[in-house]
Length: 384
Image: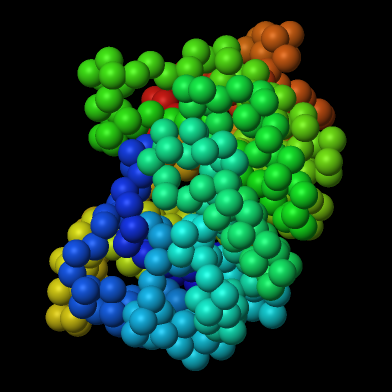
């Protein structure tokens, strides 16, 4: 397990104050007051089991605490979580470790932030999404433009490495609303922006709404224009696009997320978390109570695993590599010269002597590019 080096660590906190209608991750509004503290103790138990098994080793390069809403933890659960992070995980950290927590404005206050930073958090990802009140209401968010600004002021005063999320392409989104959000972000000393087009997933409330005809997504051409203009605006202010949805000032690219795209090992803790070790993928039970019961019984909370074959590894290398500005080796594109030439004429890719990179326009149709490239190799486009 350790031949690829120490894995990064992802810790999933599934509790939310409200379930966003577009969210397709495992999370829920908790009604059991004792579950958060029990869950955090189970996280600690799972980590110790992985430590004993040799999966969690010294030299952790990054820790990412995501959700859900990690910043919603409070009371004993928060204190136990921060104590575990400081006393058991940080001693295993590499010298230059990046420790990120996702925070929402409505649960960001000075006391909670101090608890996290004292424990070792040195990067905050703020789930702001927009500075337009109407768009925030449509997205089912509890935050407001005013609470967004308060959170930005507080976090930027305490943490050097700050990222802000943006969702655009919603019905009602225009360049004016997108620009308003970007300008508010850039008025603060943030180093990173994650900018997403609204995705509609079938199993979400938005997915059911669209299927029932209750509202219609913004046309693709309008979403594309917003995406491209936002990228150009960010680039002009020093935020380079290092992945299709992520923009950073030089040196502030997300170390943790980059490891996903580079197919480096990571270990997931918590309900529904996934782990990856080269040829092996594993995932935990997607039920917080069942997860706790399994750990409390002295067992790993794994639901299943798979061993990746040559085709799966090849497909992943293409799909994940083309998401990034680094692109992929032309070695992965043998026999596809005519396809690449057509894409270059359409402005979808750029080629050097050794690398193939998608352009921002290519990122907009990335699934199509990957599917075509894999078909040219006779590989099923699974997951593309």
